[in-house]
Length: 157
Length: 157
DNA sequence: TGAAATAGGTTTCAGGTTGCAACTAGAAAC
DNA sequence: GTTTCTAGTTGCAACCTGAAACCTATTTCA
Image 1 (cartoon, rainbow over the protein chains, first blue to last red):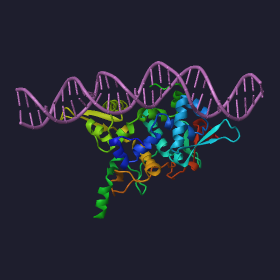
Image 2 (image 1 turned 135 degrees about the horizontal axis):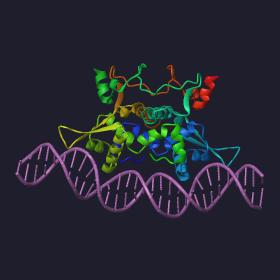
Image 3 (image 1 turned 90 degrees about the horizontal axis):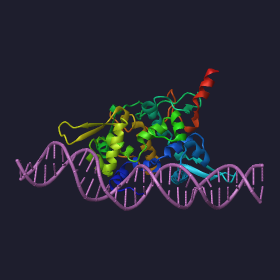
Image 4 (image 1 turned 60 degrees about the vertical axis):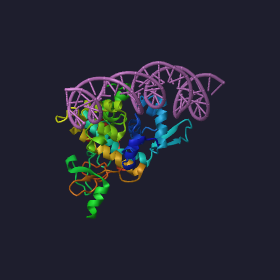
């Protein structure tokens, strides 16, 4: 993989560094956004984002390599390639929406477009939050990080 | 800010590019993780992450500039500086946890350490998900992106 | 008090990444 | 069969990253 020492130690315990290896590069989240918005082709994404062609080629290749996008030649026009989200890619939706909502609250101050809605009633989704195992919404004051070993020791008492 | 043309157009509508301007650089999420784990000082964070000192100085400065961290000289030891999360920084918790949980599911395949728990019962938090405005858990099949104008037009009918 | 250690940086420089522009190869359209 | 379109690749300049050495203001230790 390629993580140097102290970070490799963290990565042995925490999956955040591994997640960032897959999605932490410049443009990756914007390409993901484009994919969620239904863009499937190189030229579409390129002109939508204004990203340099070599960088886009590099990022798409990487996202395919890590299994976030799937790359398929179009049968009806063999010049075209279709990039589509895999299940692993779709599973990044909560992360992306959480980040976007944070930007709405703290950066732009207004709701983003397009809006993510529940198909059933076309109502915008709720704010992405942290909930307890039994469904209570939790604030940071209600939470803390604990080492697993410590929790297991307490549970064993 | 410094966004070139097509991206600037997206940024006018969607807050994801603005959020990424604040948090999209290499190391930013790992520094945030360190801050959530209670690390407050330059040397602590540096040795924890193994990040180059110049880069850490640069990133801490940037996170302070955008209001995610607060920088305060320690009164009891005037060599030391305390970096602590602001409310804006704490509000990134759902994003960070969502990304980490994604990594657990798709990259490492095992729970991360330290564990984020509900203080009340020391139970790990639930998976971060997208919910409807009235609290139903939604899958991607239940969701879609719509342009605000279109939703408003429908609502006016 | 003076020397050594500590905290939080800055400087330097080699190497890697980004981004623009031009180019290419394979298919489709005219 | 020439032009156009799609998905790239190549070349090159500017910028960013990271390791190591250095710096300045405390604080500690003898």
